[in-house]
Image 1 (cartoon, rainbow, N blue to C red):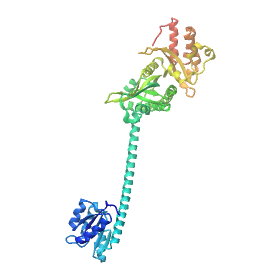
Image 2: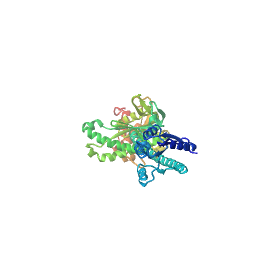
Image 3: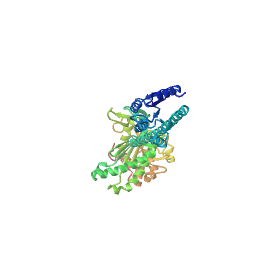
Image 4: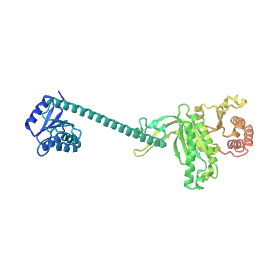
Length: 462
């Protein structure tokens, strides 16, 4: 028994032949559709597309060949199997039937068993063809879909990469853990990190001496050099603020050391940048000041429902900015808070044995691995907390100021005497430092302070 859902269109102008074929098809489980003329056959086919057509050739008005030709013109019937049933047994009739894209040609009287076998065979063959076509189409659709998906991912990756130029990866991990679409106003996380604030000295004067285009070009080149050092030491730029950079370092247990290393790297890159300053029409080398502080803050999104920004906020940011301001007063390139030094576990370079024995003074002394020195104890503008300040001027592998390193022992002795209120002895040490290095502005400051404490001059204060 065949599938009862298989519909076979019978077309014959002889009612006796139709009745006979109808009974045979029903007995085999097929559902016959009957038509006694060409016009009726086309109407029936349009109402319900048959699975196979048994088509008599010799009929009045429209013969079977014409019916087949018209059916094949319609894309819906182009793959429906057609078997011609005819009394014509000449070769030309067979060729004509094939030219009309008939699938088979049986002459009357019809061998019923042969007819049923051909019907079953053609239906099975057509089913296999349909499955093959469907498989091919599905494969093509799948390949096209995969290609479209791959292209979509490629576009998404491209957009994501461009997006990361505006929002660093470290921000996205916090504010969009489930993808960019999950970003919402107020997404934030409180944690401890280190902030580095860098500012260009005398920027307004430089801008006044150049065209806007020239300033724009060298500023981008400068930011590229600074960003490279920041990225190399696991930090990321939060903001470019005109002539300033706000960078964040968030590596657990390493962020303070990362910030100190980045600051040293930034000064090294600045030296390289200044070697090419002539091409940017810069009359003098670019100088910077950097403030570094460690503390708690929020990293997240801020703004409104219509416009938001990723940012970092907290006292740690404000304090780093205040330390940068103090670099102008002390004439230093890098100032770091004691909090940063402690978090970096950066004990300063080994001091002289006579100072090393003084436990009261040990917190002011540099030890490995950074080249740095205690500068002052101050309350920055707008702050109520007293901060211990340290100047960073190199590391064991990258010295930035050999003159300060050479006079470090004498400087530390002066600081010790200053804290012991032995101002005459402190003055002697600081004067020796100045004699060795006329550019040491911190030593000069302590010469003035010692002289003021001794009543020799008026004291200047921050």
